[in-house]
Amino acid sequence: MAAQNGKDLLIKLDLTGAGAFETIAGLRATRISFNAETVDVTSLESQGGWRELLGGAGVRSAAISGSGVFRDAATDERARQIFFDGEAPDFQVIIPDFGIVQGPFMIASIDYAGSHNGEATYELSLASAGALSFTAL
Image 1 (cartoon, rainbow, N blue to C red):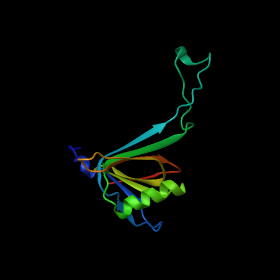
Image 2 (image 1 turned 180 degrees about the horizontal axis):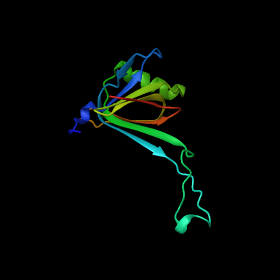
Image 3 (image 1 turned 135 degrees about the horizontal axis):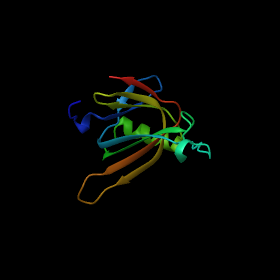
Image 4 (image 1 turned 30 degrees about the horizontal axis):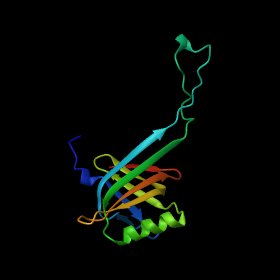
């Protein structure tokens, strides 16, 4: 796999609930992480005293974060609405030369900042809220 542009890692939001995904405006940096809890089933009979894990038993989750400049676009307004209404709509994360991750996410936090001589900025944190699908590119 060749090196990729960071700007090609996109976070998209379903604006209407009808599958019309739009890139969240103004993002400058994005990140997605996947996690899987482990279930330890080690016992006195474990071979050589090595830890044993139960496959497929832990809770899986994903977290998305991003930061950028405030643009007052439709996606900014929708993100605020999702947060205050406690919704968990579908999001898409486009990972270049890898695939598309799609599923419900809740916005865990939105931070706004700005200085008197600079642009307004924001940071988003999202937590998976259900089963995610993956489509290879």
